[in-house]
Length: 434
Image (cartoon, rainbow, N blue to C red):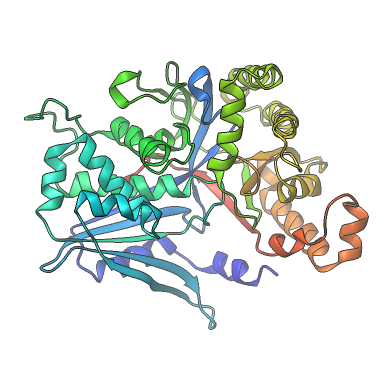
């Protein structure tokens, strides 16, 4: 079942492999943007009322990152999507998945919002709205943008934000526009990691009409383990019409070098915007049950900070278990049939009773995507192997599945067969040149 993933773990220096492959194109700049995990959720998309803890992460084997190169070319600007794979001979391989000319005509750009390259075109459109100087440079220069992501698609790990921020950061560095507040037009904004995070949010939330919050964008832009206040941002106004987030980086001040976490992508892809929209609408319409549950989540969120500074993983796990319980209740109120998601609940139930597993919860919105287990730091390898073994057993044995999960449809095993496991580390830099 997990043959390819087990091989994948044996591949050394995947990031260097990608870097060396991209260097064949003689790029002027290479960029990496990490994934993210929300430690308490689903405050995302309604986080304007709360503080929210989250962490930027990379995998210890799979880098769980988006990679972008940019270079000048002589002909028409181009965009290329690459894919990382393990081939039939068990060797790593990068393939060119798609290549297109890159239009810079605003009317044509807006028509591309439904295309395969919608994230990139919406990013260009947002640059056009935000900084005329950068837009002129992009418009007047023939460039090639190459993109590769090792974050599983629609996995609840911030994959789309990672791509957008990698492209944004790459362009502002390529054209030397970051932290250059000089000679701005009246309506232009200076470009820095905070503004890039805001732009990334608007790309999805406004330009592509995908309900999204600010957490993914700030965490991936800034990096580290943080508690972030989105006070005043509930209604997602234009960038200068509401406060910027207050990003309180805590991994350094509390000397938290890592988190004992195992991530499992369920194999069940989701559209996080569909989850966020339903919950956000209920919240903004002041559904009393939803408001009460969110208030409970907010209390768990601020209390979890004391567990983090103590490195009290068991107590933090108690909060994560409460988070999962409340999340299931919230999503049942919102009429999601299986609460946080069928595959997610199965993965959680498989491992949550192990004495060295302190808590298991969603990484993001739910309804598919990923979950993560907080475990005894000395048992990470053992728990990961056991979790994979238990999942293999129910995927391979339908009768065992029905015995353990009599109320769940066994066809979910098809999606669970595609599950992937990752050990992670805290990403300290956020989006960066590499």
